[in-house]
Image 1 (cartoon, rainbow, N blue to C red):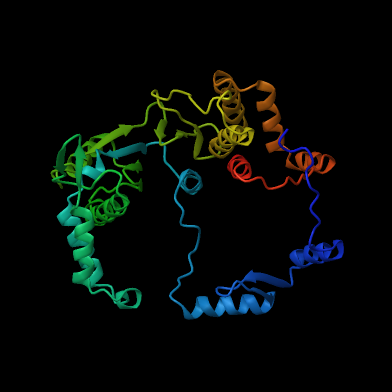
Image 2 (image 1 turned 135 degrees about the horizontal axis):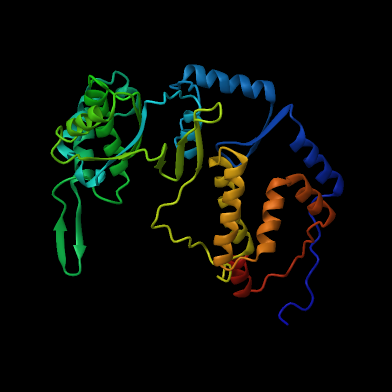
Length: 362
C-alpha cells in the first residue's frame, strides 16, 4: 500500500478557539466579511453594516425592483396565476422562425444608437461616446466569419449563432418590434409574453381576426416570420409546460410537465463513471421540476411515476429513486440521519505526484 501510516495532523487551533469561531459565525449581531484589499477580515456591527449598505444604495446608481426579474418557468407559472380568462378567449403560442439568423442587424444597430443618444445617464456609466461605442459594437457583431475545412465563410445577414451578443441584440430588436407594432395593433392580444423567440398569448378577438393578426406580423419585416399554434381541447404546450383551461375547478389554469414528441428520455446513465451525488442530482432536478410545474396532486403523482419509469430505463435502481424522493420530501429526516452517522475525517500525508491526482478526484 502507498499509505501505510497516515499521519495525524494536530490542529493549529484549540477546541476553545473552535467553539469561539462557531459562536461568532452564528452571532446575528455582527457581520464578518473579507476586506476588499489586503487579505484582511472585517468585523462590523450588523446595524452599522446595514446602514452603510443602505447609504450606498441610496446614493449610488441603483433602482429598487418590485420583484426578482429572473424570467423562467417558475416566473411564467407565477404570472399565469394572476390572469383571468374567458371561455371565449383562445390560448395561442407564436414562434419566431430562426430568430437569431433573421434579425436585421443594421436596423437593430440603429435602434441601439437611438437608445444611447437619448440616454442622459450614459456618461455616468462609460467614458466612451456614442460613436466609439457603436463602432466597437458593429465590429463585434459583423465579424462573423468562420472556417469549414480549408474554406472561410462570412455570414451576410442576421446574428451569429453561439455569440453572446446574439440574444441581447435579438431581444433589443424584438422589444422595439413589439412596442411599435404589437401594442399598437387595433385588435391587440390580451396577453403577449415573449421568452426570446417563444410567445404565450391570450387572444380575445376570435379566430378569424387571429389569422389577420398573424398575416400582419409576417408582413412587417421580410425576414421576421411567425408561426402560430392554437389551443387544442383547451390545452396549449409552451416550453416544458402544458397549459390547460380549467373549466371544472375554481381556478383559471392547470399546468403539468410537457415533453415534445422528439424527447428521448435519455439522462445520465446510472452506470456512467460519475460520482453518486451527480446521479442523485439528476433525480432531484426531475423531482423539483415536477413539483414546480404540476398544479395539482394528480399531475404531480403521474409525473413522479413517469420519472421512475424513465430513470429505470437509464439503469437507476428504483430503491435509490424512492430513497431520493423521501429525502427531498422529508429533509429533517435526512438531517437527523446525517447527525446520527457523522462523517469521519482522515488525514493523509502529501506524496508528490500522487496527492495531485487524488485532489483532482476528490
